[in-house]
Length: 193
Ligand SMILES: Cc1cc2nc3c(=O)[nH]c(=O)nc-3n(C[C@H](O)[C@H](O)[C@H](O)COP(=O)(O)O)c2cc1C
Image (spheres, rainbow, N blue to C red):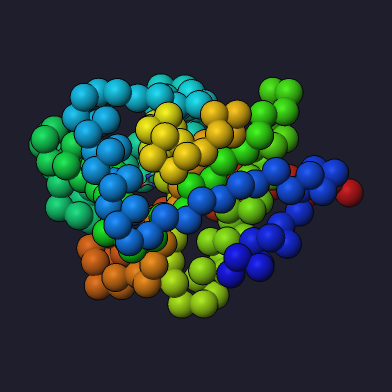
């Protein structure tokens, strides 16, 4: 799976990915550290993220995804504390035994390098699935970039884009029992002749 990911294409073959895989006692230590950050309201993202930045159909898709997910796991919209507890599952890696953190060097406005990290991450995710495992990409882990770098001894020049919690999926879990709504192909594609 790591060999598959390593074959991902990148701008000018720069291969800008640096992935740290964390398991065992270090995984638990990392989870405790970012849960403590969350308790303290201490966020240190390298890149901005706000649901309010989405607009039009993108905002609508994000909203309906959230609603479908919380309904599937039995959390009501108005149950603020339950929603927080559910969101915090991100920080214990949804119970997965391993988490991969994806870091990148900074080049220019970082858009191209972030695209390359996406290529690498998706190749890794597809290979996990092909081998009977599963992974969850998580931007939310990047909200604790400074703490993660500190716990893992990662150089501050490397920016964290997202993480991937992975292991063998719990197919019976409610979160895996609903199929997310995808837009029809026509909404994303235009043919020209
Ligand atoms: C880069 C990236 C970051 C994501 N971050 C999170 C996250 O922080 N927490 C989470 O629960 N899901 C996260 N997701 C999962 C998306 O919510 C999910 O991919 C989307 O709703 C579509 O569902 P599907 O992957 O089942 O098709 C992320 C996905 C991507 C590609």
